[in-house]
Length: 159
Image (cartoon, rainbow, N blue to C red; front, side, top):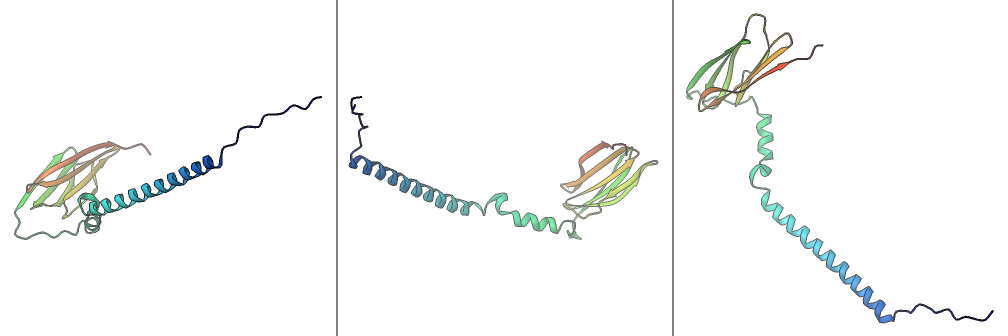
């Protein structure tokens, strides 16, 4: 069998390989620099935003939640009282300025008071139930007057 010369694939000159490695290194440096600049920019902008709006008020919200129900009433604030009545009974609420007080929860015949929040707080609620029915009232002070924020009726599952 005669010797047949097998053609070799052309080899790249050394300059071409160096150029490819140079481009790769330049790309890595540029990408690293771009990511670094982005991180620094986001960090500095984020620092300036933390003091504004709800993001910066998390500590105030946590403190308010811890002190919930511990509000003090200004003795000189005007009083307004209202009785909310329904099939469930009556819920008497008094406003003293912006603070609500649950004065009394009186269930109707056949109903019972599951719970009620006496306050003082920004809102108070009472829950009445009869059999499988539950009624929850949430009352707040709107410009010093007791106002229903929510009246929720629920049918409870059979146990």
